[in-house]
Structures are given as C-alpha cells and as structure tokens.
Length: 142
Image (cartoon, helix red, strand yellow):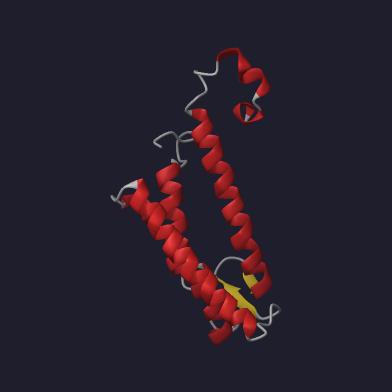
C-alpha cells in the first residue's frame, strides 16, 4: 500500500484519503452550491493535498469512503427525483462557468482515473516478482 508512481504521487492509502476528502468537501457540496448560488459566487477553494496528514488504517478509510459515497449517492438520487436541471451553471474559481452535468461527469471520470492509478500502484509492487512475464503485462509498461 506504500508504493507510488514516483515523487509527488500518492500511494493507495493517500488516494483513498483524497477520495474521502472529495466526498466531504467537493462533489455534493459543489452541486448544492450551484443550486443555491448559481454563478453569483465561485465555489469555495479546495486544497487537493490537505488529506495527506491522516492516520487511520486503510480498512477504516475504506469503510469511511463507502459510508460517505453511499450517503452522497442517496442525496444525488433524491435530487434526480426532483427533476434536477443538469444545465444549471456555477462558477469554478479557476475554470470559470461550469455546468452541473460537467461536475457530475467529472466526478465519474475522476473516480475512474484514481481507480486506474490504484491498479497501477498495486501492480508496481510486483514488478520484480513477475520476472520475464513482464513483457505480457501491459500495466507494467506505463
């Protein structure tokens, strides 16, 4: 769990901590911010490295992530039942005007990006162990 992809990258535990932080501070809060403020104010800023001081076990972190994600998906389902307008816009502090549908799509792609990162980092741990089969394992060529 301590492998990473080089200096300035995260290990599996740090990626999970990052995902937890986003569940708390970003996806649903920004959606709600769009619903309340529209483009009148930019989203509150977000420090993508503030999670790096966590100390609980990976097992505890995974349980926390699952709980938070379940809560957020429940909130999202309720919002969609009210005929949520995906064309509503908000104001990102760096990107400018963004649509609600773009925020939700980014949430999905962000998760997929980190899922791929976790797989690469976990595979890296076996780099020396797989010997000559490395030539057949595409993930090891990244």
